[in-house]
Amino acid sequence: MSDKYHDTIAASNVATDDKAVSAAVNEILSKHQAENQNQDVYRFLFNTIDLTTLKSTDSPSSVAAFTERVNAFEEEHPELPGVAAICVYPNFAQVVRTVLEVSSVRLACVAGCFPTSQSFIEVKVAEVALAVEAGADEIDIVLNVGNFLDGDYEEVADEISELKHSCRDARLKVILETGALKTAENIRAASILALYSGADFLKTSTGKEYPGASLEAAYVMCQCIKEYYEKTGNRVGFKCSGGVSTTEDAVKYYTIVKEVLGEEWLTNDYFRIGASRLANNLLGDILGQEVKFF
Image (cartoon, rainbow, N blue to C red; front, side):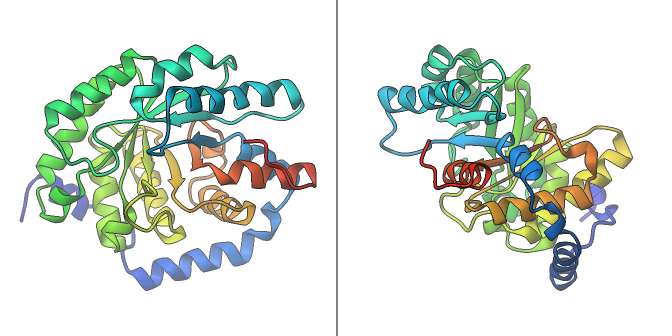
């Protein structure tokens, strides 16, 4: 098939051999992971966290209490950087916006019928718009995996573009759901579609229905982001999420980002980790004691 979507993907030089990708990841980690296991990196990684609560039991009171912990952290640990963002369902955006007192912490909302993206486009557009109206700085949507696997790349790209427009000034993170895509070839194609459709971030996973982030997926996504930047001059961020819970996990993703994308991406404007348990584990390694703050 020849159309602008398939032609753009075919023009990519990002490797898609799964064994080669795995070998590249292992080589990077064997050479560089150890040098990144230090306090400076741990502090930086804490500042990349999108502190997340996406539970069926979330309520206005529980989300308010969750947000208050972020306020309390700044008061109790002024010597440490805070998290990058609080990530919630869109119906709680106003709660976070009302309670949050830390100006450096952004408000992120999953939207567009997270976590499956299975609904009418009008519903997705409305949910994104309502989240932004309620104060969201960032919107996390899920790529339409079903349409992607059916090969309907035009529909996938058009939907992302429409939701990007609905974001207005909010930054758009596109979740590829790499555990459902499975192969490096699919992850490359999905990354390219999202990049050329207006994504401000590529994100690995929802952490819900399918396996979460993998280092191999991160490597392919970062290679696509690098190639896109070299071709267009547009810098797009990377976010890993789904199962990133230990300090060691976080350091591995940091190492991939640093070695593939470079120092320019080592800021929370372009590197994020979606997590809940990771915050306490990183904080424990920073403070040298077990911590259950969040």
